[in-house]
Image (cartoon, rainbow, N blue to C red; front, top):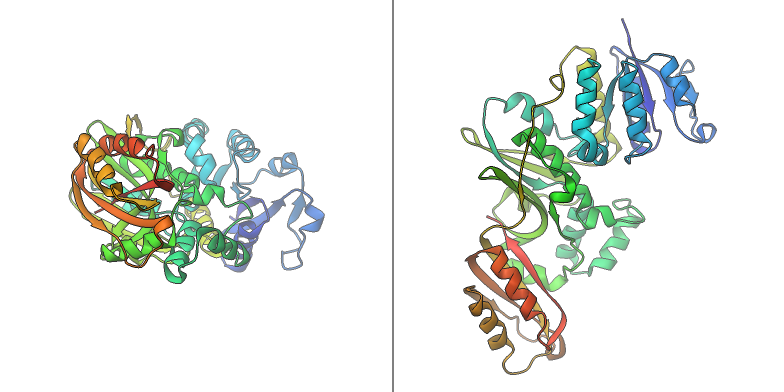
Length: 414
């Protein structure tokens, strides 16, 4: 028996999903394509029997077996999925914001209606991370998940490092090359990675973490000189998402960080993603690949639909049992502090004096030769210390009168 499928959304990802369904032999039978202004979306490569519609009521009236949502955003996409679940349809979505904010509720609703929810494409695009957690690593006790989860930010940081260009220039290039939206704020400010991290924490660690509780920082303050100093330290700069079991809670954040050049995180370039899972018994498992784009995302979406068609329980009814977790946003570690100052005698002494007053030990001071004295960039690295102490010291240092731009603090991961 064919499995009847309706696709909601016919943008870049939606078109890629439809192409996979109509071109690959199998049980999936495309019956409906739903989109606004549908007349402008019609293409001649879609089989003639497929119904093009702007009415979601018409979609549900046809009683599809699976509704695939690739519209994006929480509304109206969430309303459509809730109506589909209530009508007894399985659903597949690539919607990370929806699953991050409303995933537990959607899974619980699906359990009540005895249907399945597939959301592999909501994290890391075509990389089968959730499948690996659900099946390949189910016998381990996972303790930590970290990775590079946003291709746009990774492209921007990679290009800044390669070309020595400032953030604004590289972001403009990313837009022109199709790597960034007209407004890339969700990507560069960490909100996209934060949503994906929340989904990973639920599936990997079994903890209910909401986006608002995850500390998130932007990559905007990074300057070309930071890559020079990072290289001197044997590191690269990446937007890192990280969650680690921390007592009864979880340490969770999305931050721009220095990572050692030997780390798997350091070798992820351009628009690629990587996820590292650490377990009590299996140690580290590394999964990498292209995390965005129509093709990789479509593969994940259609794979979920095929799994449902084959009777695979993508999620056990109601999803994995979650327990609430206290989210910790700061912990002990090493730090990179970058200052850009009007150079004069006593600047370094003033900084180190404040650090010492907060019990913070300096590890090294780096200053490249030949830089302008009216906007002199230099770096102080810190030994392992409490993040709260660093934040308090930096707040006091920022009030000193020699800064050209606010000081920058980056964690040094690993």
